Image (spheres, rainbow, N blue to C red):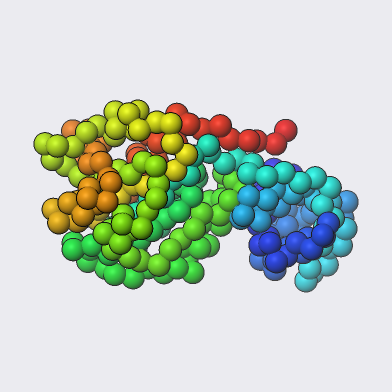
Length: 244
């Protein structure tokens, strides 16, 4: 069976896994699974499990773990992206979904001088992230933090490489800045909302160790810029571990 299923660590006890109700319902009613079949379960914390279905009822699916691996489908570097909260929720959701598929490890919604919305629907975004993690066969469910300012995120970061997306004469092409900073196993990227960052926000990020970078001459939507950054940073370093 090619579909991955999600079960949080609390659902795994020893060699036994009990699928959450929504996952169990999909397995029973959509995929028509039978006892004795094998499924792949990920716990969102790097755990990858092959399990044999031992007990299947209208209310529950219980399996026995027959194989266990770690960090399957994960890139070699951990990237945190701080993206300004977007006016249209659908655009932020699109970013979150695709960022998970590309391999982001942490997403931080940013409240900036120019954001027009200050809140997110965390439950909805969590569901989007779980779906994306399963679809692209990752084993880590990225962290989605509470909204914060770009200044606080930059000052608290200890990533080896930090980049601030901002147009300006002093901006360095991202691929060049990343090449100079390599090798690194953690990176932080700040991307503003519609309208970009205020100059004071950029200055604070640079003072905290960030490098101002550009993504070329074309004007990109904020969510597109965030995804372009991820592909630039993670793509060359990708060394995912994929099961046979």
